[in-house]
Image (tube, rainbow, N blue to C red):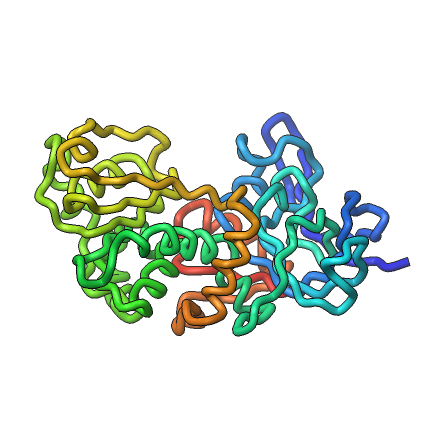
Length: 328
């Protein structure tokens, strides 16, 4: 019988949780149509919430987090996949209330599984992971409405996983990117990965209590929500487009209707968890064909399961820039 390692979080007290690396067997895995031997996973903010027992992500413990995984199919009950296929599994319920990617094996429904596109590898797919896919989804929804000639694109939360990759993809597609950050020391890093201009969050938020701000941006990719999203909307050009994918700053949106009814600004929500499968495959294929960031190695660090717990604590405290890949 196959024995493998998994990162498991257990509830050990009323509000106390502990994580450890445990030996598991294939029979421990949940039911699913596709069994995958995991090569890489990645660390996301949701994973940290799950691993630390924070409310809102995982209901039942013990649990193995990890909302991302790439690997090789071991067996499949679906005609869409066969043994030896390289695949990507991200989002849906993986790592939330279903056994996740911080494990050497996962077993999942076939409609969660995406064939590995040309131009993407097991590792690079997880250097991107849900963060990269979310960034690419945001770009995918933005670019039909906004061209590089229309003006600057604003990216908030630009040193985070989603923000960093959004900056690099937009730069590769010829857009001029203005990056907002609360980490002034990261300005050189942001310019290196493709930002044309870097502004501090204080500079960005100045005067944002006004109902409208000077129109400065043809489009916005917001990753943090709250007053950052509201400020971006108020500073968007007439007929500009704003995408929204995060709520790290706040889930409230302190905004009035003026940007929408006086400037015709459009707000598009990005739901990476339940993004339609056909469009998900298309976005991954776009990444493989021409959107693959050339600076992935510069925004990524790699750990194994043994080094994961330290990174979980660091990402929850906002101490991680870019991406963390977990090598299984």
